[in-house]
Length: 161
Picture 1 (cartoon, helix red, strand yellow):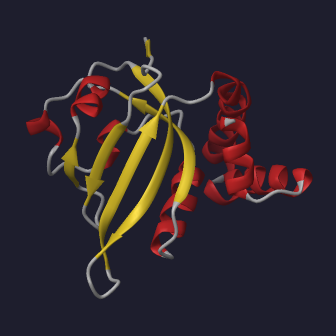
Picture 2 (cartoon, rainbow, N blue to C red):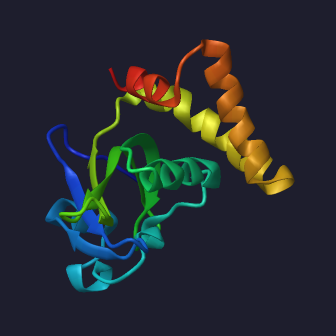
Picture 3 (tube, rainbow, N blue to C red):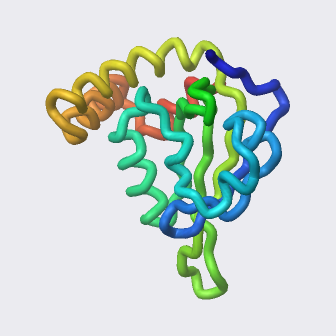
């Protein structure tokens, strides 16, 4: 069953550098159908949905490792095997010396029109991943960006408008 975020909801979570959840707000717990105790200390991948291309997560981790923020559309699964879509922004958190000490993510309701483009794209990417691997899946995305003459961020943000 698809769960929908309210228009003004923000899901917030923080993780350590290994991706283990160190903070989650109530909206995250409610959407994911987990208690705080079930989430804290667990890998953020606890909500990873099988329809989510690994190539998108590879891009996300590559960008935040470079100390850059990243935007993405993500489908998450819940404890009870429901799912929900989010438009996410992930940024690294730094100590006083500029060293990455964790990650901060804020998610909001995605533009439904964006999902009309993202859902078939992700479906195609997952199919390619299953047959040819993550690199081939990532090429599907980069080919689209090249055809449109835009960067990843330009593409993703333009869909949210």
